[in-house]
Amino acid sequence: MKPASCKKKGRALQNLVRDSLTAELGIPPEDILSVPGGVPGCDILLSASARRLFPYGIECKNQASLRLGEALDQTVRNAEIAGLTPLLVFKRRGESPWAVLPWEEFVQLIKRVTELENKS
Image (cartoon, rainbow, N blue to C red; front, side, top):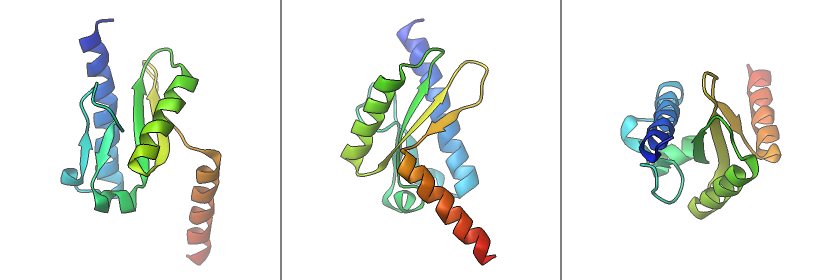
């Protein structure tokens, strides 16, 4: 696959993630930016107000075959630089995207959801 095609595929997943965060979490479009391929750092750039709603450093991988260890290393490295919790979003051809979080963060998310449901 040509580099331009790879970047186009990656950009499509980044745009899907950006649009989903805008639609589902109400993050204003001007507070969230899909970063062009090849630019160092997280793939989704968040404003300070967006980080309060969604404190994750996102790395997007739209690949048929994912080298999970390398992808996680990159995700962690970029998120740490940004001061955010790492979140890897990946998608394989013809499938829905997946999200990978550190286990401790996942448990805390479930705990917060459970607490909110118990208050209702």
